Image (cartoon, rainbow, N blue to C red):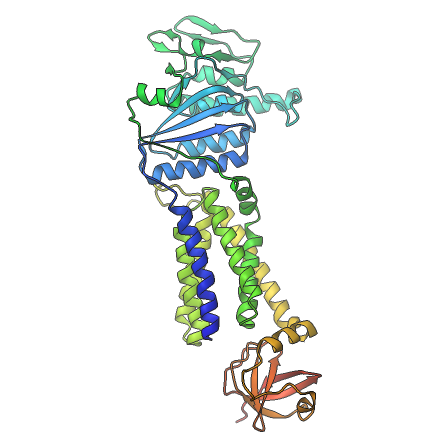
Length: 464
């Protein structure tokens, strides 16, 4: 039992260290700079979400998107726009060179826009993933939906909604204070000089021209304390971790089950620890959760282990631990921002509940199959028996000793059988295995099968 607890303690400590190490990477800063380079995609959205949550946790004064993109996926741009609405800090886009297509629509989702002297913004007409024009009927639907969406976003952030629409809709003309700055017939594209021109006492789009992010800080009087959040090599991997969350949960649960049933085997425990570590770290990198759910998970798991290994039958610690573990796993998958009010929103909990439910259902099925069939396999019995040989001269694995036992012989469990362990028959110690049930030490048992070195037993039920 002590070996089991020490083994689990080391594995859980490893998870805790890794999660705290990731959480410790956040430093206090007045301004958070987030580079958005390359294609707008789901992976870039997860990076942005993580960076925005870090900015919110440290109460940043401003968030600057350092942008250079020719565009990408409109759906990802919508998700990124929604993430920006959750931030309490002032949001600024600095267009280093390009803010094309989806990048243009994302730029108008921030409060202020600054542009490099040699840069451009616009040309957001939708195309297929291969770059070709999409069919006219579908194009009309896409343009109608996204132009309306980004009109609202631009207006919310103080930008001219007609400009946002003209970025994506070639049939939209833009007239400001009686001055036509764009005629219909092509999608709108602005150079830096066109974007900052003043009409009616206000700039057309961009607040100013800046040669660098540091220049933006000076113009906005934001000071010099900045934190530049860089994407990690795990960002794309994190996307697959979140997509395959039920499988990682399943691997962690099954590994923990086999480790507990066969203490000392080690490999299932390592698999379980690895699956849960990847699960928590993946969701941390994806920006879905901090380190707090992992700590709660460890506390809940400790309560479950104490219930099963130290004082079985008390029920309360196990139930409490199970509730905490389930809550921690659910919390890890919920996309909630640090300052977002806690409300029971079906949109927030639907995907996490589905993932957790699928993992739990698959785990029940797999554990049922393992409990019934795995103990009967020769590979399993040899592995378990070899890992549970007691030290000292109490047992000598000589084949002739096994032949003295036969079906129906009764003895007493010397150790806990889960499902393997040792038992006493006529003063002799034998390695035995049950058909899958959990048997406490000191329980009367009966031999039900002898297959070479494998002795299968069952508890003797008392008769009144």
